[in-house]
Length: 303
Image (tube, rainbow, N blue to C red; front, side, top):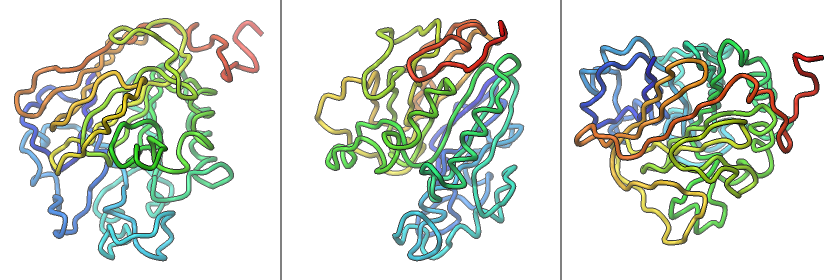
């Protein structure tokens, strides 16, 4: 099975043999931003996709005093209404664009970065419940995805802020959930470039490998996949030691789950469809249950 992540405003022509597409936001129908009204404006190949996971972002939701966690003018007054109306997601409340989705051997927890995700919020409770409800025996691959970067990014403006993430993101709130529930990968958009980050927890890499990860899940791999076709975002000149691969270009990523213990990740440039970054993950079910720092199961099958 194959999963394909991109932004809808795509320059991509190399998406054959894809089962599922994940849109890391910028779904806006607002013509001021030249974003597509429907799938047909993106790429004919997307018509071959069985279905899609859509994420809400600043272009869809952010507006002054509209209930968004951010104040700004990015949605040009849309306040999320077109996105919530035109794009179906299996959310309990379409005005709250967070939801869980299962696809083959992967369990997805999709967050809405335009609503409060901080500890104690309604969405934080949902995210934890989504992680906790994953059946890792049946669906061993646990994926978190959101629009704004709540994890790690070497983007220039995040570096100037000194956070290397969206303010209030991982450090105070989400990082402990990723570790506790052994989330395999976290995907983000918003920043218009590509970057892969080592398996990480509390800033240091927890695995020295860069192309093949195996064994226990002792940190989450973070990926920014925002180079779908809009203008590109500059990287900082600072050396971010947790960054494995950066690309200032348009592209997309593809996940291939071969079975319950083997997964392939590939980053491809839109201009030629060739692989420029890749890694594999191999592990057994016992590795998911293994006790790691801040991630020990209260009980195991042995109990």
